Figure 1 (cartoon, rainbow, N blue to C red):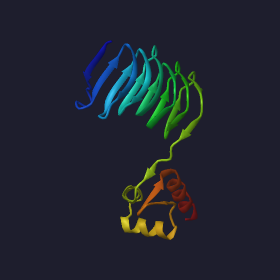
Figure 2 (tube, rainbow, N blue to C red):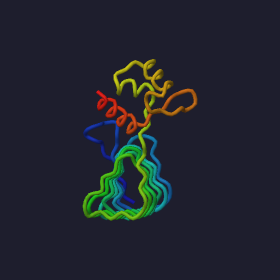
Figure 3 (cartoon, rainbow, N blue to C red):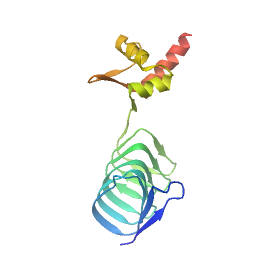
Length: 172
């Protein structure tokens, strides 16, 4: 098994690991890492940072990560918390869950896709709308902005907030 550990030029704290081997089991990273798999892997992958499945890789796994780029063959469900890119030579058989998806022409995808709705906190919406937090809470309590209760706090779906902003602007 060949595993190489390289320093990332952009961020000295984030490591790059390249796997050119056949492996099976659970591979889990709690710290951000740039992981590239060029060999065969079977099992479960849980990553932070960027996961790249190389052109010659064959992966049969449930994959969870932040940013995932697939150039090889993947069989299994894929959850990308930030984005998923399927390169032209990729083949993915499984269900996808991600807020952003880029399927490049030539990629093969067989399965279902669920686009996650990005949820924002009251603090994030106040910065997004350039309003103070009490004003956002007041608007949510009055039903003047699309929001849902989450215990004692409010959650906002970015897509619904963006539509609401567009409607408010159209009203003039």
